[in-house]
Image (cartoon, rainbow, N blue to C red; front, side, top):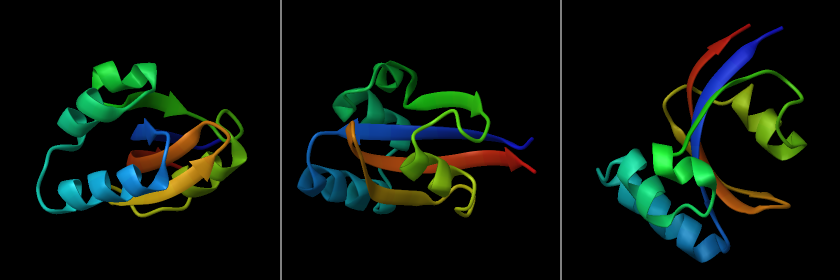
Length: 93
């Protein structure tokens, strides 16, 4: 079974999610943005989710975590929890 390591930012609306993505793409630090804006407890760790396998996250999240290019910010990604920015930092197949 493969494993992915990722970090994310969770917010409650798509507009804010887009604004944060723009800031990151313009050079802001992902971890700093996560600490400041994410509503997920992982925000305190810069959005770090650690490693996880297929099926451990909600399906929308899983689909991106196991297919997206590494170290590229993905999203906004809508799930039952809100809107996410996701960055996959490593993956094994």
